[in-house]
Image: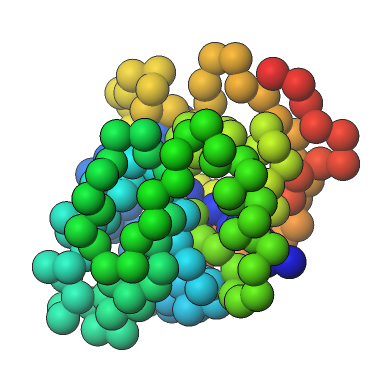
Length: 190
């Protein structure tokens, strides 16, 4: 069975939104190599509508400049959970409706192939956690305090709780720590 691996940038104060505003000083060769290895170890991308909208607009224009990473981002099968998206228009994209998302994602995991990569931590991630479908969370902890964020821009959300166990760490020269977690045996309700 394929795993779903989540990869999320987070600041020391828990901000996950608008990482382009606070991550660039820390994205050096080590991070690029790690990101490339992670992307190429996976055979599909899973995302929510907001991530899809951003990626589908940005990646086709960056394909040439980003080399094989850009080609991979644009040519992998994309799965987007959305009730409003009708014409995705970005490569091989399948739309998964929210009502049947857990069952469809379970079936997707059962297919042969490489793991499934998910960027960012939002409603789809929380659904995956609730249904015990998320196998691994890789938090890219950046040594920066953003200092301003709305509650919706933070990793934590009211009414959502989960418990994880540390599975490994990677530390870059820039101070970025990638902490890899797997779901704890006993889930936290919430």
